[in-house]
Image 1 (cartoon, helix red, strand yellow):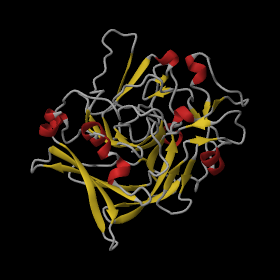
Image 2 (cartoon, helix red, strand yellow):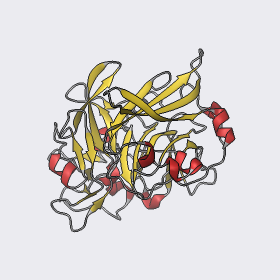
Image 3 (cartoon, helix red, strand yellow):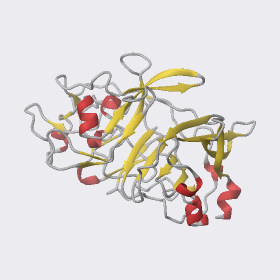
Length: 359
């Protein structure tokens, strides 16, 4: 699960071609953890022993099957300072040298001041984002961030939390009142390796020592080429390596428009390939199958017309399956408390094969 505020929104105003949800099979979203390859290696993509994540800086509570679980967030490796043993920034070095650099650990001050991520500050189950932030040592503002939800049921943690969505409901409560047009507040799932490829040995002899603790392993259906350390490939020089995997955008939006988009791929797990190789192609539905009420029905369906933005908004997404366990419908409900304090459904959005064909 990924939380990200970004600019500009990628799909909030984009028309897409029809896609069929029949591509979404029972193992569509998540793969099991891959076993690590154990070979004699040099240490690379390292954890700095003098710069760790502050233990309580990134913990929050979530409810899973009726039970409170301890979760955490891990800042994406792309946003972290990469430096060597002499505290020099690592940039434009040979691949082998870049893989020997440290990915910075982030404490509470940095999470909040540098990246605008506030975890369990006012409520034990709250994660709050500030789009623009100015760190202690910054010379200019930082805009946006991306964090992954981690499983912190024990003190050492278990990796990224794996959500098994088929036949289940995923819900969260959000505040959109201060999210203007041009900003995309996003909550989405991608099929990353559960350990962020920790322990993976690279072809050049390096090894991913950092893994999920430093936010490695990112992929999505856009097959980004700007991921600094790609899956089991190591450092990505000159943006040559595509990092692809299935993506389910549960929520992308602001106070004007919201959308839900499914991005299946022909592969279940994350894949990577070099763009300089002729057979390296994107296996994913980049545009995706989406629903966006503002785009379909106009300004009368703007979020601020449908909801009271002064009140919390609960978004419930249900992944409905048939008796065989195959996904057939993704239903999303937007709820707010009514005058009597009980939750009321204000509007809903549904993705089915038939609904997508109608687009």
